[in-house]
Length: 264
Ligand SMILES: [Fe+2]
Ligand SMILES: [Fe+2]
Image 1 (cartoon, rainbow, N blue to C red):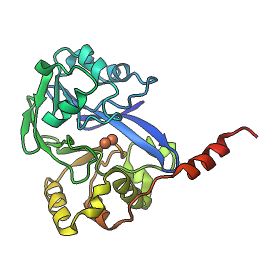
Image 2: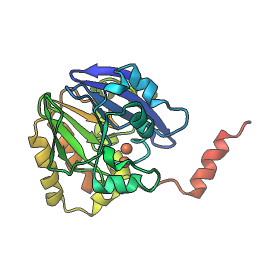
Image 3: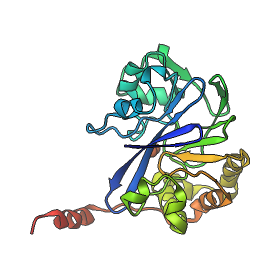
Image 4: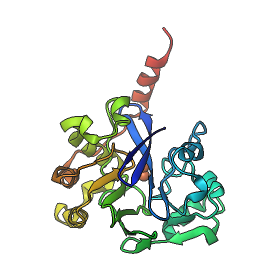
């Protein structure tokens, strides 16, 4: 896990290699607000130690808010260890999010703070405006805009698998170049397969309000940081309903792939 700070936000960057797709960035974040906020907690594989990585950035006992944008396994890796290491932290999620987490853990309800899209969380020196990103893969998904710095946290939305490890861990999306558009559309098709059933005009009505927020920087879990967002990001997402649906490798393809792993 590498760390990199942009303004009030530290990125705790990691990645997952996905055969056939590439290297998917898996970022978590610290928002250095008066009441510090951790946003997502990385991958759930046993080789990860999120709390130790976080401790390089701030004392975990200082964490006041732990915002899980949605309880998929690439967002909850360090969740329970961090709740133990940060006794003051409240777990920000939705009713559905807590319900999903409760299928695996005894969620301490006295630590939970339920926040719906459209609602606001006061973290001392700023307010975090929760919203549902236009692309998502989980009914609990909630991103937010920090109204002091203009940083926008979009969860899975705007993500893209990268062709190399270097790009997946890059500190600026501009390193990816123009190919980022097609990679984002591929990810949209993988992660939000419902988008192909959506009327483009109605879909636009979910993108425009996010564009109108005028974010100063965009932090997606699955994209290198966007330090200077421009219109291209939103125009790309608007194309998602018209792209080809993603079809994953089948058993024949898996066997062909495994054969290439066998020693000569
Ligand atoms: Fe997800
Ligand atoms: Fe994700």
